[in-house]
Amino acid sequence: MKDKVEAVLKKVRPMLEADGGDVELVEVTKDGVVKVKLTGACGCCPMSQMTLKMGIEQLLKREVPEVKSVEAV
Image (tube, rainbow, N blue to C red; front, top):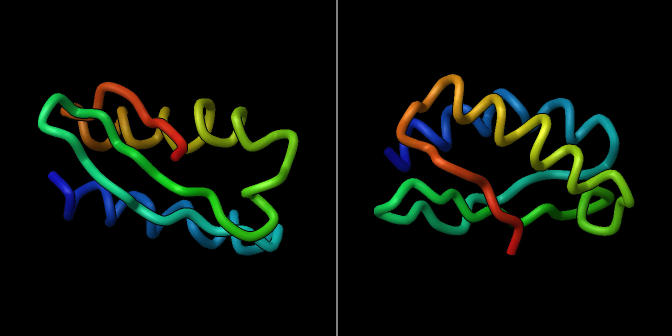
């Protein structure tokens, strides 16, 4: 599942990089929780939770059904 998650994050990266940010995959737990670290401009952006939940999490859940949630660490 980790490879699938990384492939989806590659699709998201160009959008984050356009705003000076990025996302790092930290861990994928056995129960489907994806832990990521938002870096660069995304790490301190007031909209980062919206990006995480409405962007990254929704896309991951759609493309990798085993994903239950996404958390920032």
